Length: 144
Ligand code: FAD
Image (cartoon, rainbow, N blue to C red; front, side):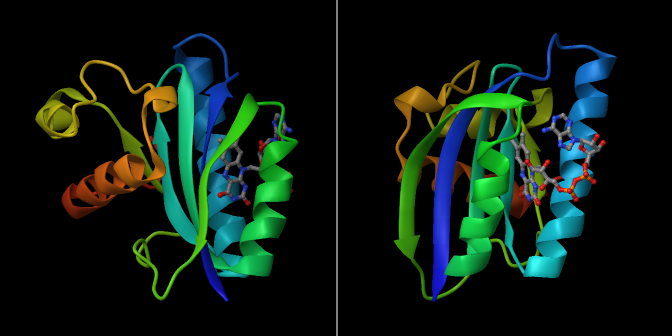
């Protein structure tokens, strides 16, 4: 059964500097490698304080991936936002696409009433999905 899971968590990669970029790229590399093997697709929205991730795939594959992610010390406070069966994937082109708030997509974030900073505690799973889909339409990244 195809399933979509959305969660948010607190970024523990450290200060917003080169080390954080290296850490984020290591996560993206592992995600792209493992997700391809398990046929898991999705998007990771990143802010200096937060991760918000959408995982889609067969229920067993999404669960196995999520179990690995939850124990990762590079983040904390993993909080489920939504889990549901789906008929089709929305991020089928992305083993894991990375979305970031940048100067050029700020209007897109503003259209979603997200403003200057991504704070997933204020968002529903549906709002996250709508933002991630708009970001995917303009192009997510494979890594930084
Ligand atoms: P490895 O190849 O062993 O590790 C990859 C890199 O990450 C290496 O540089 C390694 O040193 C480093 N690393 C691994 N684990 C840790 C750790 N606990 N603390 C610090 N550094 C570490 N994995 C997926 O498979 N799919 C995903 O979609 C995915 N999304 C993630 C989203 C977030 C927000 C985070 C924090 C992690 C995510 N991960 C994802 C990574 C996941 O938590 C595991 O680290 C990874 O799946 C382990 O796979 P591996 O054994 O192939 O990694």
